[in-house]
Length: 350
Image 1 (cartoon, rainbow, N blue to C red):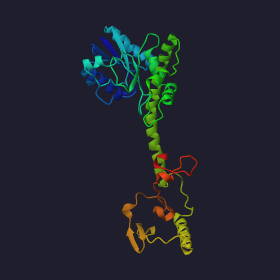
Image 2 (image 1 turned 60 degrees about the vertical axis):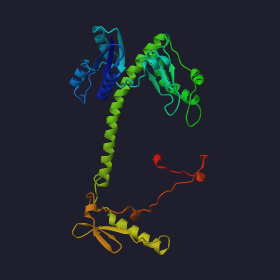
Image 3 (image 1 turned 45 degrees about the horizontal axis):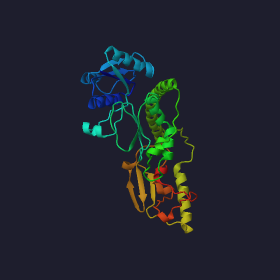
Image 4 (image 1 turned 90 degrees about the vertical axis):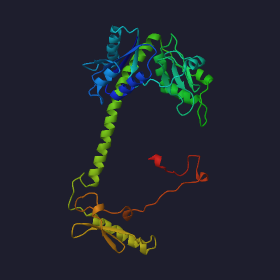
């Protein structure tokens, strides 16, 4: 029987997807899922008891976070108690593949043994690296590194995921619209090989540190949401006049707007700009309502006013204070491919 140990911390949804993928793509041999929760501070978003019963899971709740290695050791110990003759440690963010082939297709393909490391060799995902825990076959867009007794497969996997190997893959791929890394160039990539004992300790340390990275990523997502909400709140308070104390002795915005109108009149007299026949003037009437004058028409705009602000502030339309223009698309002949021309700004740049 195969014991499949899954260590969970915080990421209950990832763990659930992992469990469901195992159930959807079970190993050929009998197996037992052993779920170890490493003292997660949050409860799952689903009914854990139903999941344990549905998938016949052996569940262990650690009283404190034991870290990656010690946490998995708890599950390994239980697997041995249950008589498992093979143990698979699965990260909880792993999903077991749904793609399968017939027995005939399997025999006709290039068979990949367990623990082969797979590297995509073509297209936008070139360099994407995977690690299989069941034997299978792959298509021609994947280069497979078959396991041997000298180099730990997990070390091979982590090394191929490193920036060093990924950079080699991109550097040696064809410089075309569709990047391709052919087999001969893939065979010639440099690969750093440490002593066997160092391979084991390196893999263990990587897993420990990646466990902390996972925790940081969760905290980061929470922090990013908090930052987003805080930034929004700061800007909201600012435009409502609630961010800084208001001084009643400050010159009101109405005086500033009058100076803008005076300057515009002077520019009109000089023939530098044309008079805007739809010029907007927003003011507050004696009845405390907001009105807008456009040409000779005056309309109440109370329903358009989104919020109240301090005395001395005013609402305007954008074109009251600024000149507004729109850009335009350029033809190919107007581009400069020398990178020394005038900047051309597009939406994705800000």
